Image (cartoon, rainbow, N blue to C red; front, side):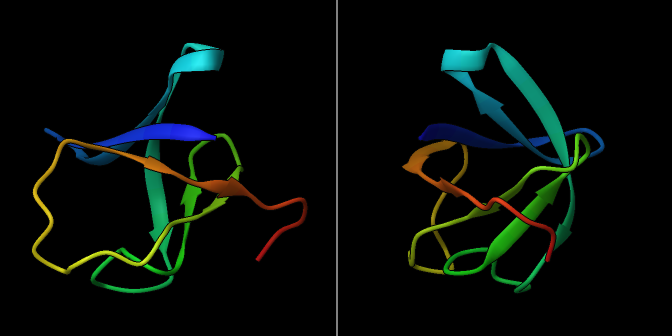
Length: 70
């Protein structure tokens, strides 16, 4: 699914346009963010693609929603 990742005043947030949903990122697998999973405040876990560590935000990427918890 396409998601937009941006830096908000409180940290990172993810916007899912098809669901009109914006949630805060509460946990990440990797400090660099890319190529690992992120957990959102609603409980969703998304796998993010590999990208350069210095990728500028906001950015739209294809993420994959995991079925279970990490």
